[in-house]
Length: 452
Ligand code: UD1
Image (cartoon, rainbow, N blue to C red; front, side):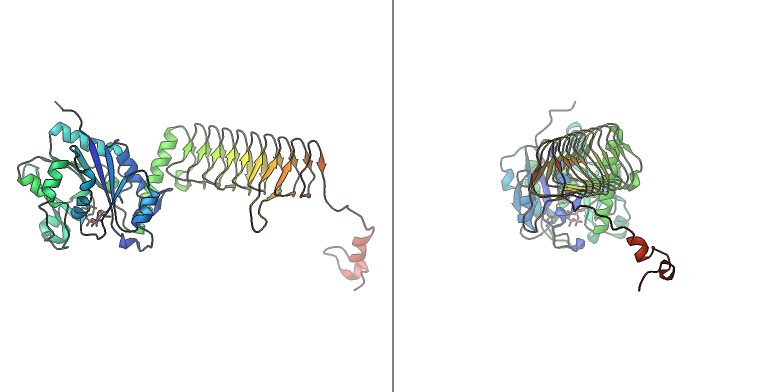
């Protein structure tokens, strides 16, 4: 019978430089599907509700700590002396902790909470002292088992024989081990190996040699173990996370017409019966309601869209937009940091920036909110049911009262009162016979008698 589950402390290793990324930015800060890489293993670990979460940081430590402030206790490893040394940096932060320590890496964004939970369940059910996560993947640590399948040790590829190199089962670098046993075992590990590093993997042989039980769980979905240390693997992880997000949305009742050309970040939420047509890019912290329709080639960044909105084709919502129910944003309309009330329409070729537009207002084709004077941004308020004619310029700061009407082509620089027509355009005049005198377009000047 399985015993009581034990408390878990997490140690997340993220001190490495990630030299193969060829970047001035720390590897774990590279964005993947809208979050920095480290956010993924951090969330996977948070899913276990651990007693504490320690992140070992080194390269670009200040930025990593600032980015994830509040989500982990940070300890520093100033010099990358090996995975064993990195874990030892967490020891004082875990002083007095008596449960299990889960060790994982900051560069494995595809690892799932369920997998980590399964490790804990297996540890409990088998009364193992150490549980390892393995997979058939191309990484350095080779799993050596005896004839009965018991794990004997992990040998690193540079230290392995040709026979050992042929073994396909590899160490993903995720371990669950009793805290006291970890510190006792790790204390005896040195750096006498090909790479001159303190190998965390050495604890496996030491624990096994003491006659203790080591269990290895092999991942069915080896992709979960993907460790990102190049830009090629970064793109591979991004594609896998995108696929997961699209599958989640489709199973929640969202129609994705063409998953292959739809790019949705991990934190995006979309309501039932919304349809996303090909070529849409939905980024950041975006929330979209039910029955919305995104026509092809829209880009939406960190915005909130209510139920029944219709966007696009080819519309761009920049960060900070809040669109009420039934809003319609059409072709080549850009909206930024603006609130659009229920039923607002801007069907073609508009720019709406830093504006609060009341319910039922309508912005005609080519209408522009002039929000920037070259130095500062200013806000514009458009009241409910106001009608903004085509090609109007609304020069902020400005308030257009509800139920007012701005004539097409007007450049509005003064507040417009309620129920008024604002019109500001030169009067049209006619010059009779001008066309014949000038010569018709495409006609010959001789025939028209035009003077040259
Ligand atoms: C390690 C394992 C190997 C396993 C592989 C899986 C050891 C000795 N080897 O190899 O068995 O198959 O991971 O990917 O453990 N890190 C630090 N400080 C250090 C060194 C590493 O924080 O001093 C962090 C890195 O940032 C990274 C993780 O530990 O997140 C793994 O380091 P990496 O150098 O990629 O490990 P490998 O040598 O590939």
